[in-house]
Image (cartoon, rainbow, N blue to C red; front, side, top):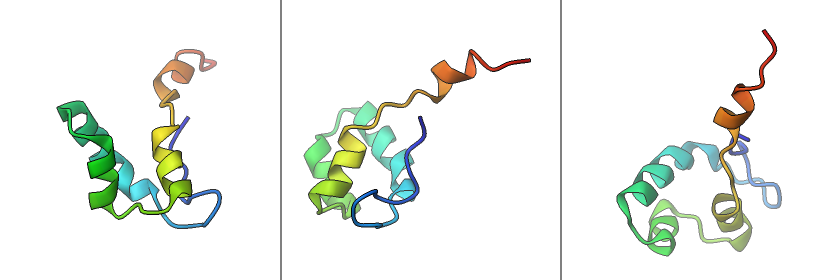
Length: 65
């Protein structure tokens, strides 16, 4: 759905980094390099970004009127 505010495992705030990560991935940069530069060094935080599927637009189609 939406990227969580904090990492589920360690509690580090990560949501503020999502937009810059997403923009740089679209530009074609290496994901490992992006995560390193954003300061995401723990594997738990990295997995939150690498495993996230942005479904908010899909789910919004089924909103009740």
